[in-house]
Length: 273
Length: 309
Image 1 (cartoon, each protein chain N blue to C red):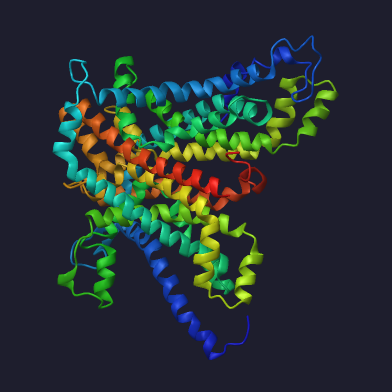
Image 2: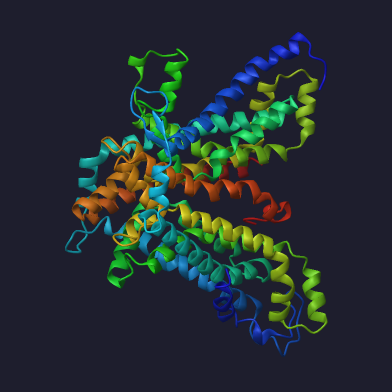
């Protein structure tokens, strides 16, 4: 921008060094994962893989492979979780945004609880309860666990999204004779849709990446992508683990790049209030 | 994505009878048989019921089972056994989580501080682009990355050897407590830094400018003006991170599976190998106590701060 005096150039040495170290720390592990995904042969003490190739990709993406089955299970569970979360949190979010509720703060806080307690022991006991109900090892059981975990995002963000809708538009619709349901589905919900969508994406990703709850409640029949990755990694199959990890990474990083389009500042400012 | 609509409609018949009353406006008395808050509670109820049934009930069950024997009578045997077998792991867990939180605090203040006070536009932009990457990367993927990155033949050692920083014989695996701390800090710093940077950006710039005019250095401005004002945000971020680190089972399982390890791994072991719910729940109780201690510290701190104002 300005002239390159020697002093100015010198300040770039510590700055560049710090940014370089940060970039290495952040992208080093990612690069390592990428290398493992295309490595055919790689062992100590070789710095880089001895042979590159895609034979493990063929194995992972074979139509009847475990990975594809796990991916299908993961996506099914995540979509059902989104549906369950929306079913309870759209009404709840609307009530929290628009109606006068006693103990509103306490109710909001209640949805944070599942994320505010160390969860392993809770999942152990959920699995114990589900065992007596026959829900262990079923998609429904895993969906319930994921839903409770995702509620904080769906309720808080939906409430913020409804809160950001201009109240006078609803009132205008009501003055023109629209009933509450009609004004909700015709005015409020469409205007709040980007926020509701953002909350759904959060819930979807939380469910897709969830490990601990599925580990306890899903055994022995449900294998999601994170569980498959875990088993591949513990079994020493780093290529399969790396490829599965990359499949899990794509939606997460993609979301990071588009989140600002869905979650506008006016909604963001209202989250948790 | 069309699935939710029918259930949603089934769940919301509640507002129907209120059709002629405005939400906030005083309605005609005749249609206001049921007060506003009842409809509100009815709408909130399904979501609250989910939390009560599938979180609060198992949580209560876990706390109660920690003090119950296999015959159902009250006993302290589980807790005693948990401490006998795993007191080292409890200390190890607390140490790892506290150390990680401290590192997260320092790094996130440094990142937030540079984003707020940095004078070079290009460097600030680069940093803003760089630091967020781990935020949305799942814990289990982060664990797998670090498992290969920090291993003896991982990319880190290879590059350090290649650039001559260390000798090949010095290459050591970091897959023990250090690996767990590195993974936690790597994953949690962007989260806290995002919160901290947001709080710093909304500060009143005039005090910062005034201090700068008086000749205060940037480090001093950060430590004495900026950090004290954003301390509540920093604390909340650190507490959420603390609890998250106590809950994550995949990272210690994949990076540090051998003893001493974190109590999350021990809980899974008690269940999978022994079906021992008593000791697992006693360990769970210890983890609640650790989280509770932090929460108590925060509340006390918050109350004191409120009193000082």
